[in-house]
Image (tube, rainbow, N blue to C red; front, top):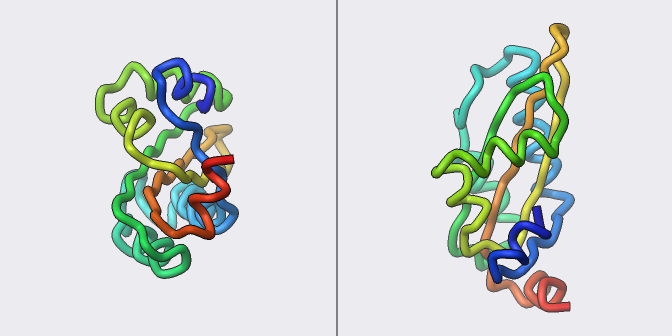
Length: 126
């Protein structure tokens, strides 16, 4: 995804473990049917992320479930205007989580955040 962003003149996203943990929990909840597929409770996820990282200005999320690998999921997101808008958005951090269900589907969640927290922005500039 960062190669795509760089091809568009955008800065790369820094992977964040806490955000990936939140994304993984959401993917697991969808795969196990504890939660319907979609952006349910996104406001709760993003609040936990904002509280942990601080100085966040914006956040967004892409979700998908397919029987395909991550490269194909990103390709499909790029053909969707809303998903592509998130990928090309003014964000500097991301987290990704996946989970498998019993039918062989893979649930993907990618969360995007823009933070001005120096502890994170210095990493993003390197």
